[in-house]
Length: 187
Image (cartoon, rainbow, N blue to C red; front, side, top):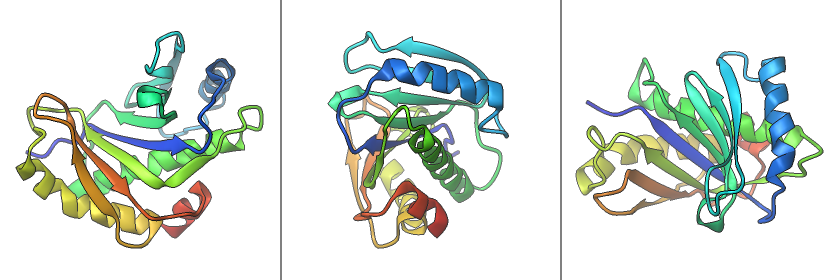
């Protein structure tokens, strides 16, 4: 059985982010139903945690983080509930949702955020069904290459990250230089 609790992270172009400004923005997303097909519930502030989750928009199906892990801020989309449907469609959906959230954040002028499209971090939060090993990488690689090519064009470079004790993770270097809007328009 393939796991479907995917995480997709796109990094910001600037390294310094005022996470406190994000709290009212995420609260507005809840009120205005900015992500119309998800039940968004609350906002959690972890800005005080060094290299932590930052600010989290908590939803029923998914969470959206502006995290600062590894001193590399970015939008991290995290699907908590399984995806009903085709495996490739689940990966494409995770990429789509991450890019859409980035586009929404870029539109918030008070945040002055811009996201890069040349690198994507992909993780699976299910070590039982997706252990961090070569067999899992071989299983996921074609779907990740297809999703990356569909959104960013070109032929991506993939690198499995971490150890067996960590969740399965892949760094995807897309080679793209365009915007988030370009990636969404391409798909």
